Length: 152
Image 1 (cartoon, rainbow, N blue to C red):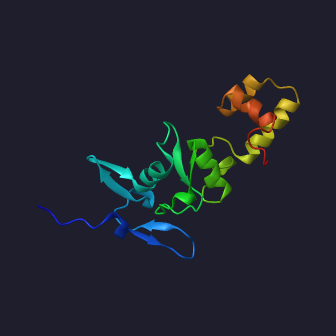
Image 2 (cartoon, rainbow, N blue to C red; image 1 turned 180 degrees about the horizontal axis):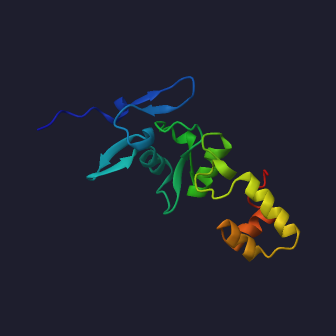
Image 3 (cartoon, helix red, strand yellow; image 1 turned 90 degrees about the vertical axis):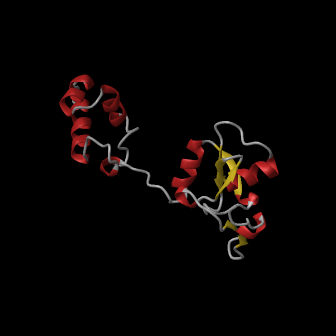
C-alpha cells in the first residue's frame, strides 16, 4: 500500500531571513523541488506559479528573483525566456560569462586576436586571415569590429 503522504504544506518552510518558502521534499537536478502530478515529475515552483498566476506559456521559464532553487514563494518568481534567465544569472554573478580563452570552445588566444587585427589593419583579406587561423571570415569580422574579444 505504501506509506501515507504528508499534507503538501508540511513540505514547505519559511526562511525568515530571506522570505523564501523552501521546499523540503524531493529535489531534482539543481536543487529544484519536485512532485509527481498525474504520473509525471514536475517542478514545485512552476506548479505554484501556475496556481497563483495561471498557466505558464510555452517557451517561458519560471525564474527566481531570490536565486534559491528550492524557493516556492510566488512573490519571488517571474516569467522569462531562457535567454532572459541566463542573462539574469550572469548579471547576478552566478554564471560565467566566458570571454576569450576562458571559453572552452575558443580556438584563439589573445596573441592571435592582436595579430588578426594587425593583419586586417594592414589590408590583408579577412578570408585569407580566417584560413590562416582556422576560423570563419565572419569570426574575423567580429574580432576586427570588436564585437568578439572586445576585452583585448
